[in-house]
Image 1 (cartoon, helix red, strand yellow):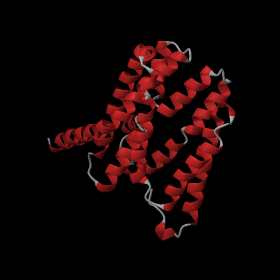
Image 2 (cartoon, one colour; image 1 turned 90 degrees about the horizontal axis):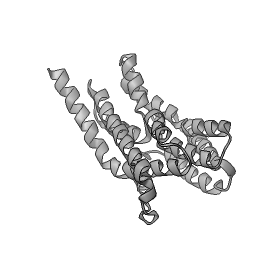
Image 3 (spheres, helix red, strand yellow; image 1 turned 30 degrees about the vertical axis):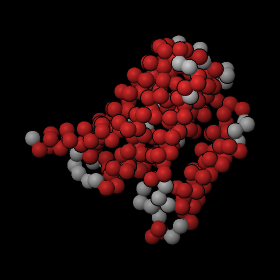
Length: 237
């Protein structure tokens, strides 16, 4: 009974931790649904993006590239590179879940997104306990469910949403709120600044390749600075 109570409590805590972030995620999902339809993607396939891929930035990039009739190989390569950050997320979260059965690891890996990682990693830095995987399940499922609903709304109503509403500002602000507390060392701070600088400098490249290169270069900056730091100062993640 104690185990069930701890699991229920951790799950609900994960749900509640994700709710404020939905203020930025929901408008983002609505915009994706509308963008996918405007790019000529049929409704079922557009919803399938959110159900099966479940990666906001990758979905937006794919929809934009499809609208520009980009070669499929470039679309796939760009999405893969943009999502390489999930390997870093996975490496950071792995110590917390290494004792779990494989079925749990697969489920939690499916739910690993930017928002879930930000909430989960901050939570695990200050909280320990045997039911902590239930926290991540709660926060991940909350995000997944809201993403499906908001995508559906965008598909159904996107054409009637006034452009003057400018809903696309919501998610960048949310990410800024998540990012700032996580910039706890010079490598991460330098990587964030490099990503901003490179993305602006390379914005003119075709097929949004500037975003791809900016991500790679920023990760390289962070890794290089991490390697030259004295061993005692390196981050544990």
